[in-house]
Image (tube, rainbow, N blue to C red; front, side, top):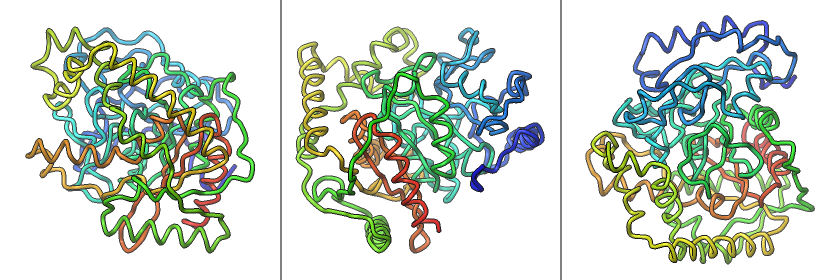
Length: 424
């Protein structure tokens, strides 16, 4: 087993107990990381399987059903729902592989933000900079891994919700091809854009989780003579000084290691700027949560509710036109960039201060647009994408690799090669 894997089936019970004890103490570093923890269950290791994941501690985003527990989705209006009677499909696959489930990790309400702020259950502190946002929406999951409370976090990614918190907390976040992992038993934000994937401290750990959750019908295609392409347009606009310097250092390191890197304009990125991407999440979440919006609006975070309510500004014809325009973009991207891996910073900024965003609605929404800009490209283009941590000048940033749909294994292979350069 790879030396970057910290778990073993023999130590799982002890490690789980230590993690739960630390969470129960509710110190400032772990406060609000979980919405609820799970009682140690015979199901967690009932098979005593010898699989690559046996004994791994796994946190579960509060969007996934776990047998015996209420799935709250970071909300108050769901907290008294009936408990799930079975695991979500990917959670069952992991449990059957011998993992130990730690708890439901905290998240932005209904997964509707890339910042990770939750007014109902508190906002997890950024593991690197405690006064900054953790990133979202899979906020608690990323922090749980960064703090060692879990080995792997399972979350969702609609516009960067795995990769943003991974980048902000110095870990790896992998958004697989959407169709490759089942979403059965997982509450939806946008059925057009949602993907299920892992976060961990290494690419290998993400790979193991992904291969366990991957549907057998999802066949990974091969990238022949893949090269890295850095977009001159959109993705490098308005970078923080620290992010710009860190990204340049990462590119130099990859070039010196022999990676083939090209810089050019990527046509679809100019077209993406004209697509009203917000149509998908607003319309599709309204379809899911319209009853709550009509009867329990006072229980919903106003910043989340206002974005769902934008669905009322979209007529059926406009929504269908957006769907068709997106499909045309996907086709164009897969034709023009076949064989290429797009290389860019995960987020153009470092994690901002939590207090500033809590106090200022305008800053909240503009910052949300900033952090979602680069990672959401992969969701719109139906691609797979991974964020790797890179340290430069006392800052940790995310370096993101994106490849076309169903090229997950080649993307993971490329990411693992990059990881060896970034963390020799």
